[in-house]
Amino acid sequence: MCRNIHQLHNFEPPATGDEIHAAALQYVRKVAGSTRPSQANQAAFDQAVATIAAATATLLEELVTTAAPKNREEEAAKARARAEKRYAS
Image (tube, rainbow, N blue to C red; front, side):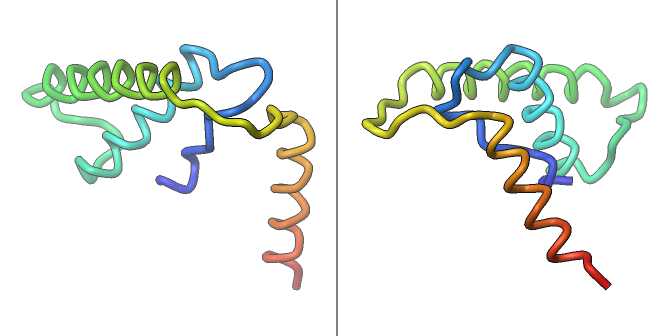
């Protein structure tokens, strides 16, 4: 599951709230060991996602770098090339 969490820092345009929430959701799913919590655990699951998303947004706002921002399309193309190489038969 964590393989779906992508780097969010130093991209132009910056990461969106949806991207941050998706990363937080994947993290909580991995830690919890399930993709769907029971009704008894739904509130705790949702609170954890909100807390992780808020912490991630704060982190991204406070990080500084001197590197040039990355291009999302170029990074996606590189990832596809790595996957093709990895899964080539």
